[in-house]
Image (cartoon, rainbow, N blue to C red; front, side, top):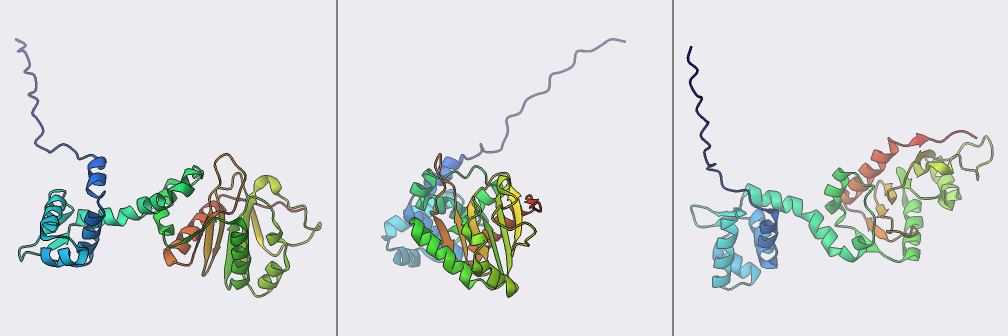
Length: 266
């Protein structure tokens, strides 16, 4: 049988448009007026004139910005003439709080080590955006003491040392009222030598190989401080009461609590 030469497959050029780079998206959102425009159209369908009045833009500038955002597929024009955010534009807004948060506090994050945080928590770090940054150590310590005194249902904390807060009378009094106290400390500190032999602590205790953050999570308030790069621990961090802030602190604590080793008995 004669072997016929096989034809080489014909390579066809893709008809798909080349993927957009993320730097182009950043460019589109680099203007405060365009970002405000997208937020307005996420909340409500608006015509060009109303948008211009809300954002205090001239008609020419509003028209130019609308065209640019439409070309970027962040917004679209409806048949009746109003504009609205696309599903892509709404998704971009949902993902932007983390970048806005770290950008707003860039001086703080430039000096902090977040390498021990799992990626899901880094992706959600914008949930801390409603918190207040406390840079003074004494202010933070006072806030923490007040927070412990106000707790009603639970107080969960990660700390880089044993600390007097683990052994103080406040914990004992709150524990008698049924408050769930949990502390995660460096594993090398266990068992806590300050406890008398055979004594039962007023809290649940677990050891971690490394403490990723100083953290306090309660039913109504939360605090988180990230470790300084190449330096000693301080208490500069974020305090908040917002539900999303509280959820982030609770989730981070429980993530590491499940990995912690139970404290050995003395």
